[in-house]
Image (tube, rainbow, N blue to C red):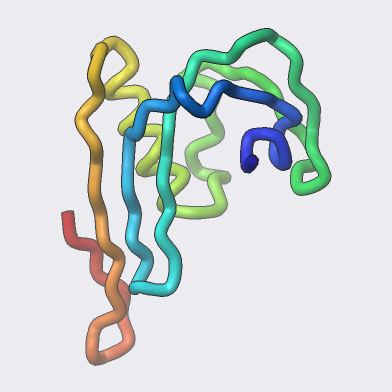
Length: 104
């Protein structure tokens, strides 16, 4: 569903490969998948202002809005040539003093 809402892309759910699980302080769990696109059709969905394909070197790393996007992209890059990717798991916790801590 997210691929459609964000980028107007349809995928075959049976072909999804889990890349990462991110638990954000027990308030949200994000699952990151990779999948080969069925075609080259895409467009900005109602939740995006722009979508496009870029090379790894063209990703605007300093402009990414969320740490989980950076983690997921870095892991996807590391796993791009791996037939069966390792699943990255991270938990982001709030410590007693109110700071964020990441466990791998």
